[in-house]
Figure 1 (cartoon, rainbow, N blue to C red):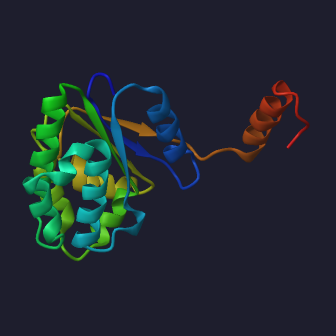
Figure 2: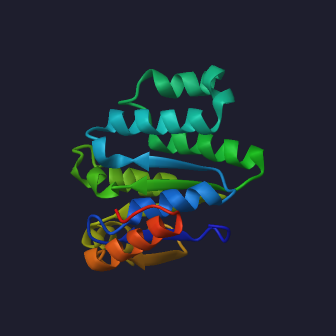
Length: 184
């Protein structure tokens, strides 16, 4: 995250992808927005999610005309305009920023063809780093790693293996015992 390398995290459901990132976000000093894409069913719902995250990260924007215009019509708001505003705020803050896209495969199901517009909108935004999480490695490969249509570079990939229940139970039991508690 410090190097601003974009990261794809793949692994089966329940392998700890989201937990890993949420723990990391709690200890790293870089401001971040976590975007849970599971409930994005339309362009408008994506825009609303992004506007909410933008205001959460930069509360002073809520009263600006630029923000009010973008929030007026979520269905018609161009993603490029939204990310330009986000990028302007990050530049003004003189900090780095991380956007975490969890369950991004959901965006490929939306009728409005959001992924191509999203990819174009996110490019060339220095200081904004993306972490993209999905259990669908095939979808990430097809939509983000395609050499003929690259997303953003540089990209690192982290592939998580399924959790082994026996090892996980041992880990939890040892942790509880260190805290002076009985086995879970």
